[in-house]
Image 1 (spheres, one colour):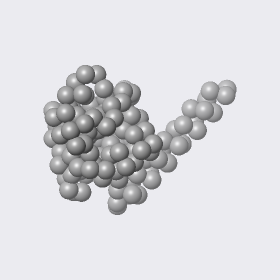
Image 2: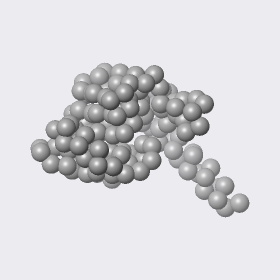
Image 3: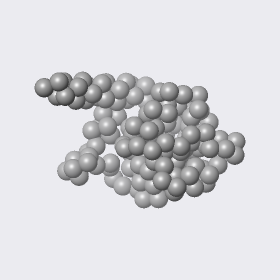
Image 4: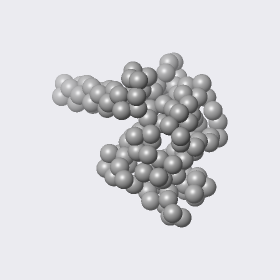
Length: 146
């Protein structure tokens, strides 16, 4: 099933979920946004699914753990993302494994990735990720009002 998701990923999508011989969803977008939207809009869709994504870091892995994905492929996957998935019994493969997911400026760790290290459990890390996103969105909204 992961091959079907990977094939769709190669067609230009950034996140694909498949199960039972069918593509359930294919999204495009930047960063973790497509995966997060899939999980938050239709959490049941990812349960037991094979998911392929352009980049899987620890933050994306946390979302996939919360979602109950069965297997995951990342074109790029961080060591911490793979560890998180394997620790929760989720099979994972990758095109390229990297030590960490970098921020867009390539001068440090991705802030989403960083936010997923604050808790002891996937639930705590997910809450931290959502809090980071909410704070970021509030800062952006305030900046737009100026």
